[in-house]
Length: 284
Image (cartoon, rainbow, N blue to C red; front, side, top):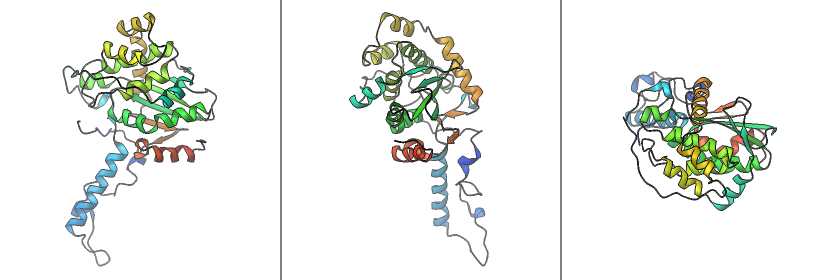
């Protein structure tokens, strides 16, 4: 997998734990003097490695559209066997309401009047988004089912332009078709659960998107199939990508809990993210 891109506009708070001298931990970062003395080379290397690792965990994600050009003229394609969601998670997701937000591009899952809000900016081809969903998706769905929070999704598709292919925009189009069919939460989860092993792999073909839909009870229909194969919601997908670009978040996954952007590794750890929600007052 290509190394994650650190967004140029990453928030300052994401760097709070990195030593002032930067993540390299070179000799110049540790001043000599009677009180401290020079740090042994082995300790400097270890400290630098630790800081670099911390920075990577804090900022890991898929960079936004302005960060570079496509690394592939056409995304690689592969064939994989669709994976089913765990039965309990699928049941919870099937009970969640979903609708378009007032802005016409955000998908709101859960009670729109819930006290807490979790905003998620994601691209279906972003491996870090899949990592976030694997760690926190079921947790968020369960809390939404209890009426504790609503989830507001902004679906980006910039990775197509960076990596080649149309997998992101096709997946967003299909997700909107699932929303129209009343099956967005289940299909959204299925898309991330069946993401390709690498973001360069353009797995979301029409055929595969329809195969995934077959695993969501009640989703397949002539209307849904035509919407997927005919890209009926391409203009909406473009509007959603534009909303992502205008948001200024710069990378995916961006997760905001009650207005507070979460920039550390808790996004990728269920227990740590549960603590984030609990500190915000969410009853899990």
